[in-house]
Image (cartoon, rainbow, N blue to C red; front, side):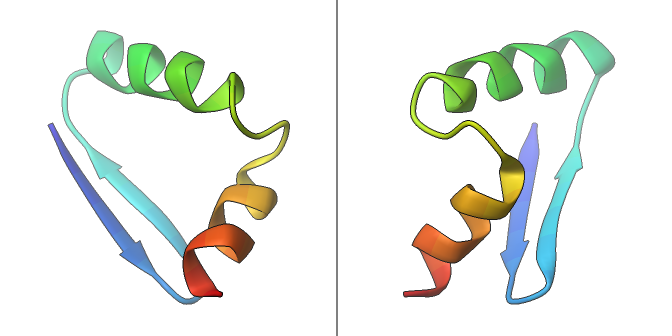
Length: 42
């Protein structure tokens, strides 16, 4: 699985189950994807 992070968003490439698992992991830290993007761009 690959995660590409850029200023306007996030691109996740991989199998569906991999992306779901990764999103579950990040929901423990961030409620919204926008919060994740803001944290990375700081």
